[in-house]
Image (cartoon, rainbow, N blue to C red; front, side, top):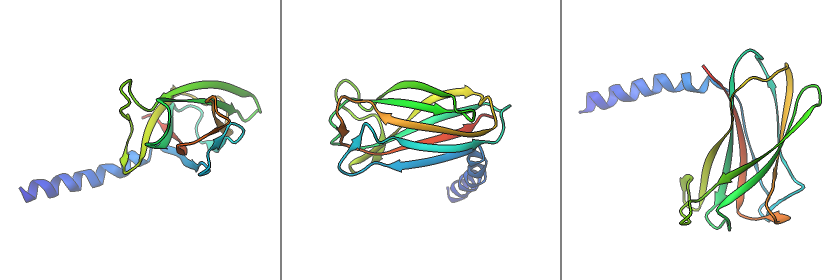
Length: 155
């Protein structure tokens, strides 16, 4: 049994670096402990290395188990290199209808990935900025720890 286990472990170690090469940008912003204000966006700026490649944009929501809602509305502003701004709204379900959390984690913090844009091309070289605002009906939303984004190249 040990040789099979070690062989599997070595194969996984060799494959893991190949998976990481697809990530073009990844960052996480921590929200204030007292709550996330509607006027305080999580802002992410990155350069697109290749406009001919296809990308996936994933959002990550880390929340505490005492988050008071089933879902989270996000307002997203994407600023292109030519200063054009594209706005969007995304609803993230954090629990099912019975109140069971959908994310994974340990202790009182859970994380859930949300596929925001799939197989897209960025039209121009340069810096792109994503501003993510909380769109709930509360001016200051409690229970959200972090908001993250990952830009991954499709291969």
